Length: 509
Picture 1 (cartoon, helix red, strand yellow):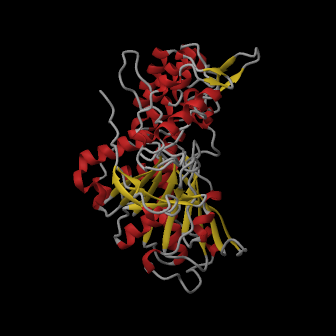
Picture 2 (tube, rainbow, N blue to C red):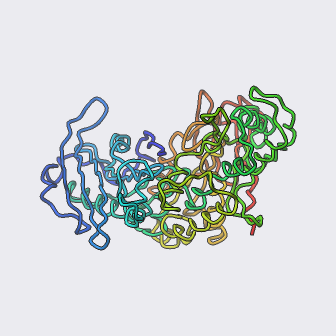
Picture 3 (tube, rainbow, N blue to C red):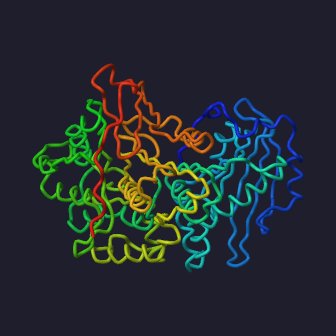
């Protein structure tokens, strides 16, 4: 899922270069006859699209970048405003198993950016591309999705932009959420000179751990023979939020302001009547293991669990089978991952998994894909030394990509770089916000604009603005949280200040 770029003005009244007053250096259609880097990039389409009531006149280019070594091929789309270019380039990421698509570029182009996206080697959002049509592993497709396709896009797109305008973009940015956030971090880790600034929301850091771990709750319900109906999960969610509502922010607003300070006791729910039955000790035991997160058969830590305040729905759905029995209903992305990336068996039945076989798949995922698509390397020295800025954010109520994984990565950055970490990398946690958007909490209004200010004017963001349904709120840099001063309307973010929050406990050995 991708966070769409938010409309913004040029930051700080300063533009890297004024919008080009004349026509581009060459006609859009002439790009089909030009050569671009890398040498194996080929333009298949270059079309000038007239302005509309919602979009400027745009040169829209489609390229393919082929890899002669492994036969892989990625599609790249580059959309460039013909009269309103702001001198910058913005690459936009994908979501789920989609590398990206041209439909995500409209917002960036409207803001004056030359923008690009890539399919990262396959069409659509399904994970079935992990296997070839003959059932063999699609190693090339996996690697292109992992990180190679995005780098190919960055090189090709900047070459096209430079040719079209007759000058290179002065600043290059990455903008993505979920898979898009992971793609941005892979760029910082592996290709530190591709982008000056990276805006990475809900990044699926430690992708193999996260993606495999998503099905943990379903395995627990299966092995304990206790699928939990949705309304019991919903009752538990509401109870946790009510118990911790004032934690951190000091106001009753349906949002946990400091999620790592919430220590809700699920056992208090035993005996609670719901529309789908009484919550039992077995139900609570399932919920506790979901919050604890995946563990090995010997109790060893595998990955983080669900924070309090995040919905159970999505990863822990249940349904009635043909016999009217309640059974688990896993997230389709988890089924694709297990079938097309781990077992290499399109017909694999997840219900055959037990705790031991789940642990085996977990270890296999880390071994096979940690380097290829894990985005967990904290050595950002080259990115930092090139002047790059990394702005990460995550909704604290994310149901699918636990915010704890992102905090884990940032705290490991701090272990490596010490007090200098926030000179080039900052993390913001949005209380009550779901996966890239949604949820009860105020959502970011212009986080990407804050990144541009940081890169171009050196103004490092201490807070990001957020708003929802008439409520405004500052989102503070981790580990600070926004607390109401006790004066003025709590719906007005100007009446909040950033105070020390609760740090997450890092993974246990």
